[in-house]
Amino acid sequence: MVNYYFRTLKDDSLKQTEELRNGVWIHANSPDREDLESLAERLNLDMSILEDSLDFFEVPRLEKSGGITYFFTRYPYKDDQEDTDTAPLMIVMGEAFVMTVVQREIPQFQPFFTEQIKVYTTQKTKLFIQMMEVVTESFEKQLIALRRGVHKDRAKLRRVGSKEIVRFVNYENKLNDMVGAVMPTNVSLQQVMGGSYMQIFSEDKEMIDDLRIDNEQVVDSARILLKTIQNIRNASEAILANNLNNRIKTLTVLTILLTIPTIISSLYGMNVSLPFANSEYAFLFVLFIVAGLVASLVWYFKKNEWF
Image (cartoon, rainbow, N blue to C red; front, top):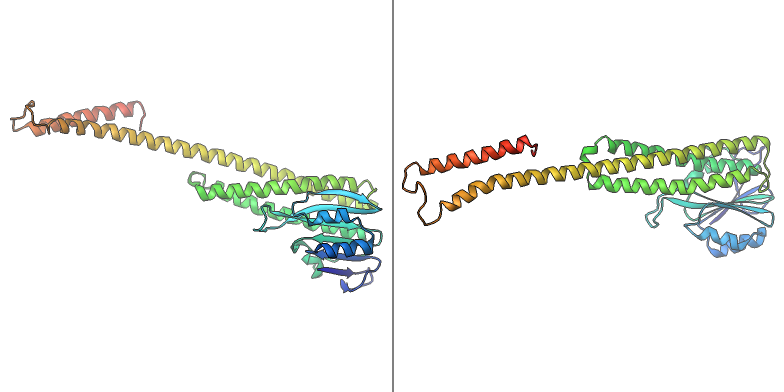
């Protein structure tokens, strides 16, 4: 579906229009190849680059062809159909238009449509920066949620089980997708600041520079959180291995302790002549021998800190 939005500094709200005009924002949501071919023909776009927007795993990058800039990035999006936690977003900056192409509904743009964030489609560079700001903000929110989840599980480190380990793996996947999306996007923003890809004013450079700093902080925080998760997993593996060793040691000690009375009682269960076989105190004697041997072994194990 392709929608056209327009707003100047004189307009009170963002309006949806049915035709192309100077200063329009074209938003293509889940377009098919025919939609892209129609847009390419009407706007004189490079169809070979537009086709890349149909690849759900397209990596962030920056290209320019025929005087038109193609900015590829990714935004946080949970989709059970794909093995990734980000979705692609392409922003096309033309001389008289801005076009965005997404394969899934992009919730980050809802504040634009609902007037929670005012955007002016005639201010192309500022609109581009606002789009990138809401994407960065969504990464920051996701990072905060992940940090809370990691610290919550870290608080019960000694009770980490299979569910928590699976959760840690999911956290790592999300963080790796985040770093893989934000880092190349930041490189593209650095190229944009040069002014050769789109018109950049002095105040725009400051906003883009602030945006780059925010992205760098997201990457740094994500890497720190990844190290924290790895440390928690290593610690949990060490704790589980130690608990397993202790249990095996305890079972080994119990096996040895139970083996002694088993052997003695087995010997006295044989139909042969045995010491004290005719004595009325034979049973007590055997019990004293068993108790003495078991007590000696318990003392020996405790002395050597076996349990």
